[in-house]
Amino acid sequence: MASPASGRARIAPPPPAPACEPVSIVFQTAGLAAAYQQGPKVVVPATPAPTYTKTPTFPRMLGTAVEPELPVADPPPPVPTQHPLPKLPTAELEPETQPAPAPVAPEPKPEPPAEPPAAAPAQDSHVLGYLLGSLAFLGALAAGAFYFFKHRSRPGKTSAPQVPAPDAPGAAPGSVPGLNSLRNDQVELLVGEIFRREGYTIELSAGLNTDDGIDLMLRRDSETTLVQCKHWGAARVSSREMREFYGAMAAGGAPHGILVTTGAFTPDATEFAEGKGIELLDGTALAAKIAAVAKPGENLCTVATWIDDFVAHARIFDPECPVCHGTMVIRHNRASGAPSWSCRGYPRCPGRREPRLDLLPSSAPH
Image 1 (tube, rainbow, N blue to C red):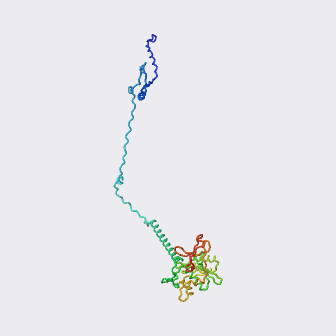
Image 2 (cartoon, rainbow, N blue to C red):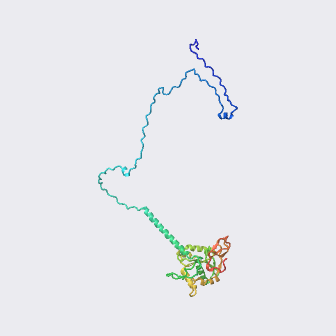
Image 3 (cartoon, rainbow, N blue to C red):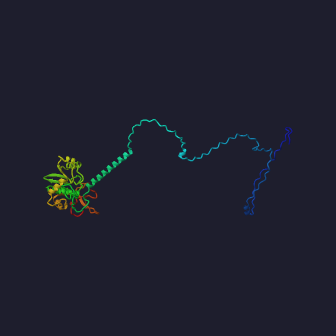
């Protein structure tokens, strides 16, 4: 319908859409099982087609407008691939040597005097080490020989019968046959028998390893003399042993002492003993005393011939425990049967001393 004032056609508005009807579900009473399997019936009312009052417009399609051309960047240059080069021999890497020019003879110059070649320090150190090693080996060998000859006849190691062995040919003049075959404790008993026959009363311990270093005590006319014996045939008694013996004399309050050795004394030991009340008896003096007191045809080195008489006249006392200073008793080892002095308080006290085998009592073992 056109309006006269505007002269434009007026479009009538579309009729209003019918109201939507509610959805209705119809169930049948009969045949509920078939209706349950088929599902409920839905009735949807028809919707009228929409009407447009304006021509729809669509977006512009791509490609219809001319797009401005963008500058295109040049592609990057290709990177050359690095391949590892093979190693060439050293001779090929060195530059080619040009031929050396002909040598030109230099002008003659006076040569300095040649110096003597210096000695190689390494060689000197090897020689010095060899000498030091040789000296150390010789010193160890000498110390081992000294220890062997000093302790070759330790007491208490064997109870073999005391058969005196004849001395080696070429022995020193004045030596006593069979003296070198005696043990240390037997040499002490021999010295005691010599002084007993000279009129002394002998006092000694039935055990060895006394701490004061005194082996025998001689008593005569209320005078006490201490005796120490060194059964050394290969070494000489030095001033060191002399000082130790002099200290034992001072501790015991004895004004006189006798140091006996089967070998000899050094000059400094002889010098130290002068004026100190110490009498020295070396191997020669000991042989002279044995010859003076021995009966015709008697060899005092056979201890079994005079030991009973010695025990009957000497004063033999039991040793003192070196640990608790208590009394000691003779016990025998269960495995070997070897006797030894042990502390009476054993096993509380482990004190022990080696016995003088020739003075062992004849009583049964404890």
